Length: 231
Image (cartoon, rainbow, N blue to C red; front, side, top):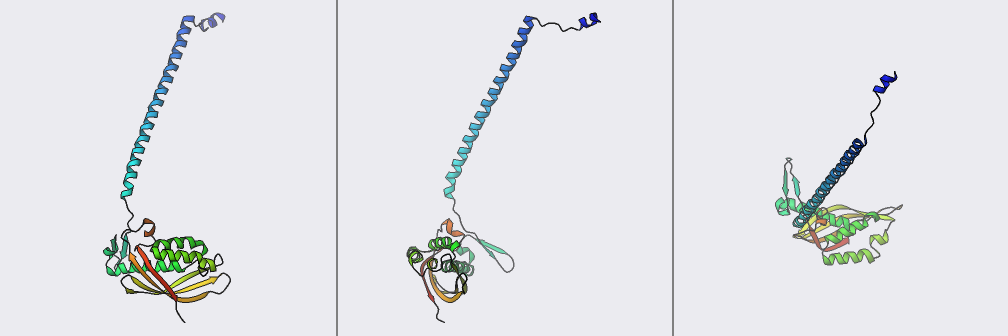
């Protein structure tokens, strides 16, 4: 039994073989580290090149942006279901252009004569944007300082709304708008009166982008006068 076991004993590793083995292991480890470093450097320069390309493309896009301008697109749905498009009022024809202008005129009156505390800032900004210099100055002074202005009389305690009665053209650039005005302090009965607004306007050739969605006709109100109707 001992003779058989002796035949299968592990042979000792001689010192020269041991040294060669450790040398091979160290060489393999060193080469592995070198390969990893090479790959890391390669990916680093790839990332740098990608960032440079993104920067160049971003700069090119930024240079092109000022050349673009927001332009309203008018869609007219006719009775037969067909749709006509245009990028200016002139493309719509006289009748359709008048409808767009009437809608902008009513939007101006509605925003100027209505009031709620939550929407007061938005309405103030929009009316100011749609007004010419003189009309804007008078409106802002009235809104801020006049004791009869809605934020003074109603504040957080009430609201005012309007309902259209009629919108009639008087002459080129002037509309007469009759409407109901309904004011109410919360918890009290509403007060309903009728009024007439005279609105004189001009069309803008280049409307600011912030105005297009709210005022696609791109009007600027140059005169505004409102009077309560007698019973």
